[in-house]
Each structure stands twice: as structure tokens, then as C-alpha cells.
Length: 211
Image (cartoon, rainbow, N blue to C red; front, side, top):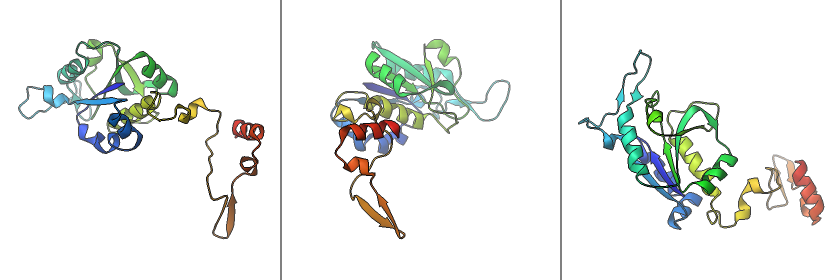
């Protein structure tokens, strides 16, 4: 999977993409991440890309043309491309969407908004899919883009090493335990559930389904 991130702040991704599973996936060439800064596609001598909104209102809006040019640079002549427009009003992102992206597309272009948003005409030029990661508003689209990269990357064979590590593919609750079997904290003992120590696979599976 090739992730193409359109953002005014590519440096905000540095620590995330160079660490842990995503960092290893990049090193192993399971995924690739490229950045396209709209500031690099403006004629303004100060590389400014934001303007006041028409009809008034608070904040600033990112101009359409620099974003359009950044998307076009990312898209090029590539095939199997999906363009995602991150928006609080978009469809709620899910594992099902992530899996669909990982199977159907080779290139995922993710457009990160900032300030009061991006001129809506960008979406008239390109066929995009509006996606939201939750019922809240963030300062920018960079964090949602990282979330999407993480969730989609997990669906790619080899990224997790063992494909069985994908939690959503297993019958499992979210409660997990490891050693020691018992520990004491503030005069109280905390123990691993006995069923997990029983060796009875059927009872263990039943416990996982019921918790």
C-alpha cells in the first residue's frame, strides 16, 4: 500500500511513521508513505495558502488550487487510487472500510484539512470519499491520517508478522493477561481468571466469547 498524504505539516508524522510496527513496515517495504505540501504548489512568495472565507465567519480556509495541484502530483497516472477527504461530517471509519481499502486499492491519497477547512471545490475536481474517525473535531487532519494509516496497514499481509495478530479476526474479548499469575497492590491480590489457567480450550473459548 502506498499512502500519499496531502498536508501542511508533514513533519508532524515523523515520530509516528518511524516507530514500532509502521516503522518496520516501511523498512520492509510493505508500505510506502509520501507527502505533498500544498505550500509547495502556490505562487504566493510567502507560500501562504489560506484566505478569509466568503460570506464571513471565523478562521481561515485553505485555497483550492494548491491542494488540487498537490493531489494531482500524488495521483499522476497511477491506477487503483482512492482519494480520501478527511471531514468531521464524513462516513465513520471502521475496520471494514480499512480492509476494503487494503484489498481494492494500491494507492491511498489522504487529504488533511486545517484551520476552518479546505475550499469545497477540491471535491468537485476530484472524486473523493469523505471519512471521519469519530464524533469530534480535531485541529487538523494529521492525527486522523495516522489513524487511517495504522488501521489499513494492519490489514496488509506481513505487516504484523503473524496475520493472526489482527484482533478483529479473532474470537476474543479485549481483556488480556500475562505473568505473574498473582500480584499484590495496596494490600489486595489481583489474579488471572482461573479459566485461563485451566488448559481447557473449550472453556477458554467460551470465556472469550462471553467477555
